Length: 245
Image (cartoon, rainbow, N blue to C red):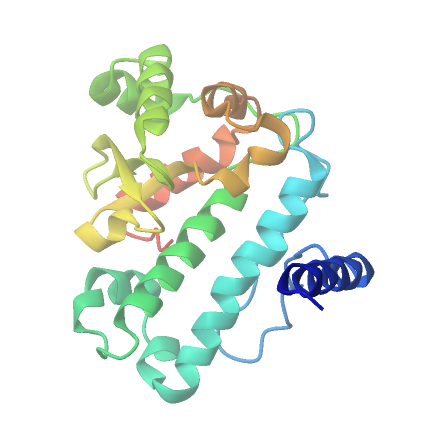
């Protein structure tokens, strides 16, 4: 048998074997496990499809249960060996994250930020949206951010400029002054000593199923589900020194 004949037979045998190999299953996210520690996954307070057509049901389910659920699971695992994680307020942990045990520092920082960001995010959305800002909140937006329309335009612009994955926030200090900031990854303004009034998630998992690469369209449509009643409550809590996450 010539080398050419042998090579051809080996090639054909390999090709036949490849044709009979079963296709690999499509990757899926594991469902978030029930909490077994001090951290729990917050309830949305509305159905997964309640924010349609602006945010689709599948995105809400995957985002809230699996992505956020993973942060909760991570934090409970960290807390098993590092009691400080479960016994210290999240705001303090984030403000002092560089003092966390080195072995878990980055992982804990990312999961703390992810948990805080998402717990806030579910709060400040509502089916059908809510009233536009009014009262003290409206006055603060007019004073510090140039009015409602300018705030939305600047917020959308900042969200669109986030490179890769991150968040865009409006922060508030104890005097009620507002500012617009963006953060990479799951970083949170509490890491800089600021409180979060509201924010929007511009990770692709927050919008890609419906909007694909059209992040500006997602940002523009998101205002239709903003819960200004809840954001107003958060503003009052911040000025009273009672806003936690």
